[in-house]
Amino acid sequence: MIAPAARRGAGHASCHHGEILQGVFLDASGRRCAGLVTLPMTGMGSRAEFTRRPGTPPEQLTVLPGDRTKAARAAALTVEECAPLRREPPCGGELRITGDIPVGLGMGSSTSDVIAVVRAVADSYGVRLAPGTVARLAVRAELACDPLMLDARPVLFAQREGRVLEALGPRLPPLVVVGCALRGGAPVDTLALPVRTYGESDVRAFERLRALLRRAVATGDAALLGQVASASARRGQQLLRHPEFDTLVGIGRRLGALGVQIAHSGAVAGLLLDPAAPGLRHRVRDCVRALESNGIPATRVFTTFPPVPTVPPIPTVPTTKEFPSGPAHRGGHRPARPDTPRRPARLPAL
Image (cartoon, rainbow, N blue to C red; front, top):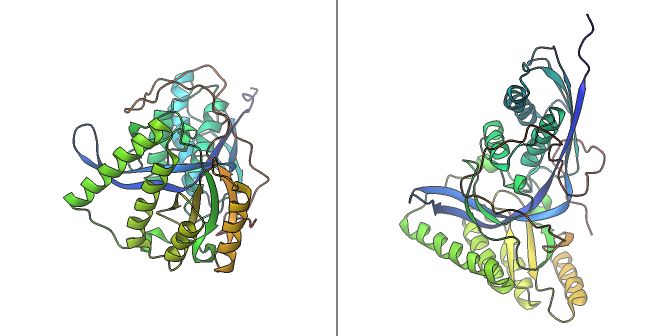
């Protein structure tokens, strides 16, 4: 008897540069839930290739590198999701993950891996999974996830539930971000941080920031977005206690930045600049020099305004409709570079 032919699929997912806003918000029913709005960043990402072996038991799944336990869980869950759509029994296969996202800096490296894997497995079945389904699988694989499956569209996202609380608009206001790494780029152990409890006054404060961010996105007001990001960063600092935070804020104020943003679960941060302000090139250069002279390594300069295709509205309750005929979503961003070992890493310096 001839064994069924192996079938290969590929998937890609980008990363983010920490958060613009993170806290506790009210959903449509008035229930409290944790939520965040990330600052998307293209260029870095994870890529996955999955070769499924029809006829093999589903537990016969090999993963390279072998320490990607969340990604392996995501692959098994996605096989269970996609096989019935093709009226096939679940099977095993080989999964390979490559990428260049530093680990432990709050850039969504694990979520990027997981989403790339989900897309690769779906692609091997010729299935395009809806963003809501990808989010559901990602949360099951890693307990919480970033909204990277929505491809840079600004949303308030309940990371522990995998659902959109509010679609803020098609794109963020135009910004130039001068990225840096606090604590010298050392990874942050988020599990070691104390658990923060929020009262009614905190929820009201986060809801005010949410309303301001909604207005900033609707009107393209980069300055207002900078105010929201700075306020959220300062609240996050109460828990993270980065020693360079006040220096970062001072540099931004002195050089005319619109605000600062930080990863609420990592060490990356950024100065937010207005791309329409005069002397932008010199301003970026001055920010880099000021960061370096204060012992804060500058890492990357990027923008929030790459070409964005027309996209359909994002439902606040993600759809679960699937498309059982290919190809699967492979991501629209530049593919990742060759494999980087999965270890704590620093962002490449400017």
